[in-house]
Length: 107
Image (cartoon, rainbow, N blue to C red; front, side, top):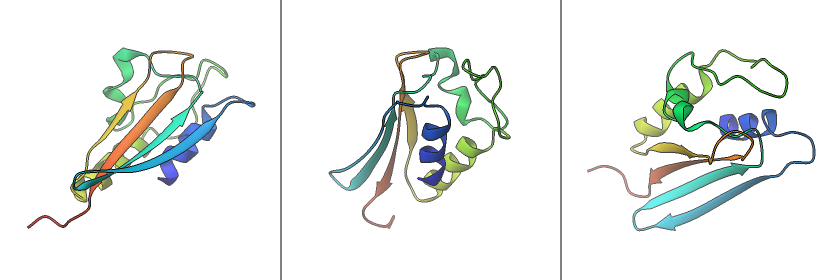
């Protein structure tokens, strides 16, 4: 959660919005972090969960960090039996990162 909120704050310009939503669907909890930030091109949406992959920040021309945050977040979510994904209509159109966690342990 910290990584997703940190990324949203980092890539949302001043005056933008960040929202957090949680809901239950069947036997899982779905948590989403939505922002009005720089967005993610469709070609980068799967790659951003790979180690050391970074999307260039079009606002500053550089991206701070190591490119490990989302890959580690994905691993932690999967270790707890969940999944994570991103939705974005493209550059400049914001992003929604969502992840699930099962409400019951794996038997």
